[in-house]
Length: 373
Ligand code: SF4
Ligand code: SF4
Image (cartoon, rainbow, N blue to C red; front, side, top):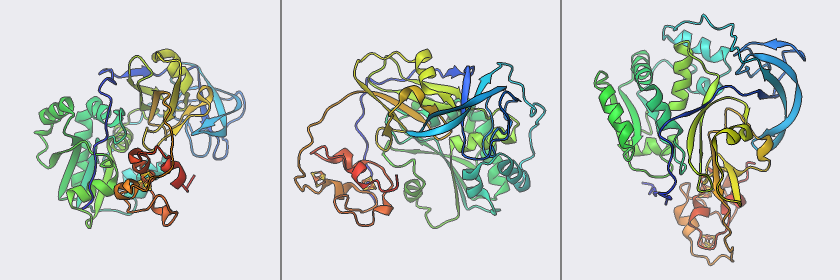
């Protein structure tokens, strides 16, 4: 049985209990990964596909192409100027009946590859596991999504459990999330088939592999979704807006950490300007987590695409890196039983960052071992 650890956290980093909203950006930037479907100066409506794989989160006008940063990589993006009218051809989309065919139809139409991979060709699951956990320190997205939308999410879990004839339905929450546990307990009574399952605040339980081990259901047919995936599915099925996403911006170099509901594909610098007060002159900006994320190279041009869940703005820390003392801690901690010091089997590395986290010599082993970049 794998031993998981709790990460040390700075108790001074507190998050605003209210969600902030960034829903009226002047421009959005759609990365061009596939064929462009519109012309320069053409009007677009909200949720209209502007490239073969991505829809616009706003209505407005396509004004050109600009090179921006998508996850630290230069990427040509289609720039759409907002007309602030939120015009949509999908306005009349109504709640869809939850059937296997409707789910597939919606996911295919909306290019939801991650959800499709999990649900395609499945008509029965033994267990449905919905996770409201965020592993990374100071990231709160999943718990805020649950808070925002608990009634609809519980109702969808219930409907999925009937559709897939699952025996067990777990809603997983960390046991230190007192507020949301109360909300869950207040709402879950009408769903006796959903088990609110509380787990310790241990790193890696957000990952499917580790939570299934914890629940001891590894050899069964499981549907694992985090609440963000479930919320996306829920929005499609209920005919609600999917043009926004939740991100957390937190850290010790800012006055107050915030969870922000933002339009997709906006500029990070526009959100920072509006909501974040930086209080330290020297800082690093990191995307997708302190343990497994990366320092942003060009904050001004960084786009909040669908894959960006968090931004940490942390005081710059300098550690004196010294030579390895062969203590073995990095090998002992590795959840995949790898030896980060030699390069064998590193394709199994899950980029969890624990080897770097425990190294007393501050050697950045994660960077060393990350071979998939
Ligand atoms: S980053 Fe890779 S090598 Fe390091 S502890 Fe995690 S899985 Fe092991
Ligand atoms: S944890 Fe650091 S010092 Fe210890 S063996 Fe690994 S690399 Fe060397």
